[in-house]
Length: 394
Image (cartoon, rainbow, N blue to C red):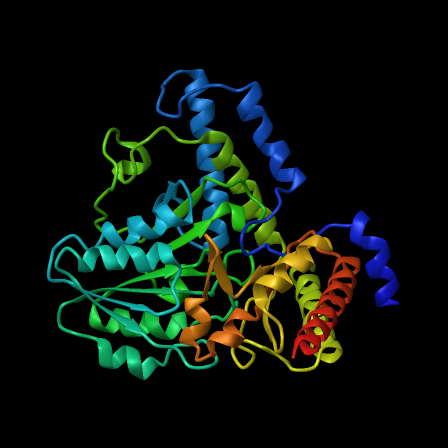
């Protein structure tokens, strides 16, 4: 059945399973945004009727996003995306040389490169290791604490493996020591419930385009008593925390996407997505020998599975799957003909070969059971062909 489907659908179907990179815009989100592009005009800082209407739309969206993470809407700063939110959290709180920062070896580069920049300007940093399950050890965190530790920055869900970190436990430690705690929740928002008070964090980053909203808009939660130094100067926007005229259409779309994401925890769509991911994982492991799940023994977000496949070259597998109509991501970043294995998978102890043969499947709200079946067939067929080709060369 799979072989027949593969031959038929190779030319007629295209399935997207790279939602952790970005998600398709939902129709409801698009419809909410359109009037603010076409028929409604105004600056949210203006005092006239048009300006007040824009301000009302921005604040309604701010409340929708705040509801998703259970914070006061005035604690939200709209940014251009998750990268800016991460940078604002780090550079906005670590402002003096000599401070110590704790993060992990598997963070997104928006955090890693920001921390490295601080190191170049007189700060010190500790990069916590992770075990083979992709999680940090709390004892490692405790040992890393110093009298001058200013900030702990840890992602809630890893973008490559989906593995969740014990952020609530980290939050308790940070609170007890009076250390600021930033959570990069870009890959977690909309997939797992988030309550900033329960986590105990001081700052938390999210992004719209990871939850079926528009790209180019994100938000940073800043606890109300945190003194945040802005990165941009010009106006008093976002209560003086982020200068620049608000991107109203994107903010409205973000609000709508957040509302839909929050409803997903109650309307069954989140559970459905988890079932589809589990079916994909179970069937691929059953159909393909010499394969395994990266982070299998840790809690993960419900849409993500990262698998290694023995006996195949990751870049070749990705190219073949792309030609067969399936879009997924690999465990290697390839530019200018050079492929570098994922720093996340290497940090988890995978060999270069296993890391390079790993593939991330990340599903979205638009993924169907038919898409999952298609993916299973195409991956099984592609790996069978690649292994046969490899064997014939030996």
